Length: 566
Image 1 (tube, rainbow, N blue to C red):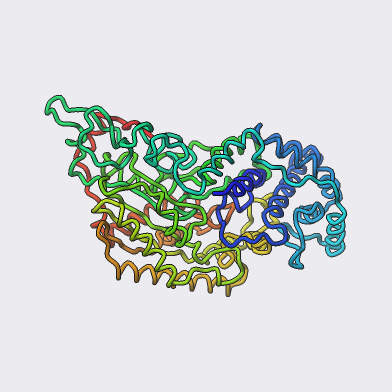
Image 2: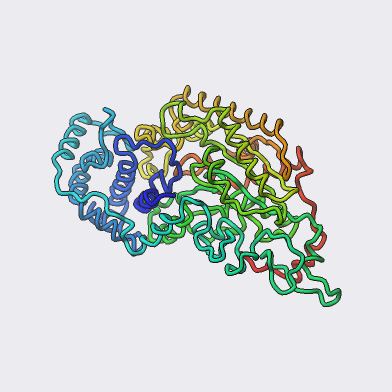
């Protein structure tokens, strides 16, 4: 992750712009103002709506907005208000729309010949008002532009950390260099099991051991010696029980990308809405600790709620010796090429550790980008070669007896089909911004996470699905044709798709399982249901991959309680 992405995200916390923390770094060209434009439109729209909701002036609304932010981040907001506030106030008081305001202050442009607009254009004299805004922007002088957010004291350490380490996907705070940490964020325990001794590289989750008389070398909370037998509890309660870690190699779906809807809903913006903003940014706008593969806790954060279930929790329920043995190696925007060249190398496992159950999911980015073409989609041949390279890397490092479940790509047409006529949170005050309009707006700026599926043009949606299905066939062929020494591999259709189908069959609606802000990812309910569907698919089609129940679970619970928690 680049510092530029961090700056975008920190600036976007004023709005939560869709780019977020590099959620979709592929194929973005920032036409017509790009991320600056969407940031401006969202903030200006929220400020204008708040002035009506609270019956206050535009100036008072701007001030209130800044005060909602954490203290250290108010500085950037104040700089922007000082620089752009007078013009924003004047134009909003003259009843210009947020999009025209942003055109007038130069945040949005008309480079492609069209005005990208999130909100409805003025009902009268739209052309004249657009031209007047362009002239205003052309004659403006003396603006300082965006502040350098990474110079803000509270933000500077975050930027420095990402500049040094952010692109490697390893924990930042890892004293002993074993790729595990005791810090929650920055790829720490939110992503990987807690390192119970960060000064000893021989101590880490997933290690195979029977000699934990004095030190819990695999961090599962089971250690010491049974005074009645003289044997270690690890050997008596865990050895031969089928211990197996849980991991996901994937994209933003596997990482559980989520933007709190309160951030872009004018009636819900508050100090409380932003209270966890730094924690959220340090986790890249992802929630791996609540995800379908590696969730291990219930939500205590204001920005997200819902049921929690995960493959890891089910593996731990089968065998409490698996406690803390999870890794979420999922990256926003990941495609098969990036996975094979870089991301997979951050997976921390070696052949002397316990076997691992790996969920491999790249559900959309190989057919998704901001570019309005198919040239930036991965071909079936490339997809096969990239994934084969990833699997061969795994085969060289992971322990014998491991399992890999390769998930196919989704049919993303469900996004438009279920959301297009619904209202996006930014339009909830006046019911004036549909998801169809939101999708068109992102495409106009060429910052959409998926031009093909998030598109009002049915032909593009169909073309994108056609390529996705071709990639699924390539993945099926790979699984059928290749064998590996240290793991067995299986293909299944994407369980998130199965979860949606089951939800609808039971009387629900698909939109209820989709993230409201980005209109692209499964939400918290969708993540929990995906786990249930995934488990059901395995039980019915490949039950041999599910490990046995450890007969000592009850004894472990009695002796070690929560096993040290997380």
